[in-house]
Structure formats: structure tokens, C-alpha cells
Length: 114
Image (cartoon, rainbow, N blue to C red; front, side):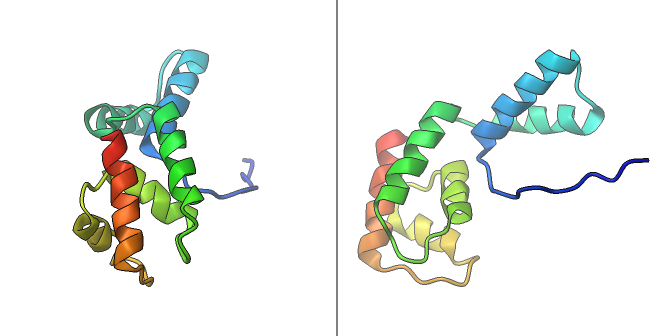
């Protein structure tokens, strides 16, 4: 049995995963049990397209907010909080602090795409 080797690890949005599953389904003609369940979940909860998700990611990244990592941006895109308080509560799961002004800037970008 072969041992898969992890070459790169990076966070992806639910929209990106949904597109990847479509590509795999087209290639293999069907998905395995876990992938099918994941696809069901994504169809229910993923509300934006991959193109839109990339655009949001780029806009938030361009804000140049200190200490905001790509995985935090991905989480924001997946959940799409509307207010600065919601962004703050989302980021409380991580060990970072962000100023109120920056939280408002992020919320404004997300609200623009909602």
C-alpha cells in the first residue's frame, strides 16, 4: 500500500471545495460516500461562487490588516459575517486581536458581497 505524502497545506473556501468535488465527480463519474456527504453539506451551506470567494479574499487581503492569516480570511468567507461584532466573535476562536476600525473594514467588504 502506498503512503500519500503531503506536499502543501493551505486553507480553501467551501466554494473552492465545491468546485473541486464537481471536477472529481466529472473525472471519476461518481463520488465515494464521504465526498458525497461533503457535497450535500456544501450544496446546503455554500452560498457564493468560487470566483466571488477569490474576489473577497483578495479584497480582504488588500486591507493589509496586521495578524490576519489566510485561514482566518477563509473562515470569514465561509461564514460571511455581516457586522463588525460578528467578525469579532468569529476571530475570538483564534489568539489574535484586531482593532475596531479593522473589524469594521472587513465587515464592510463582506457586506458588499452578501
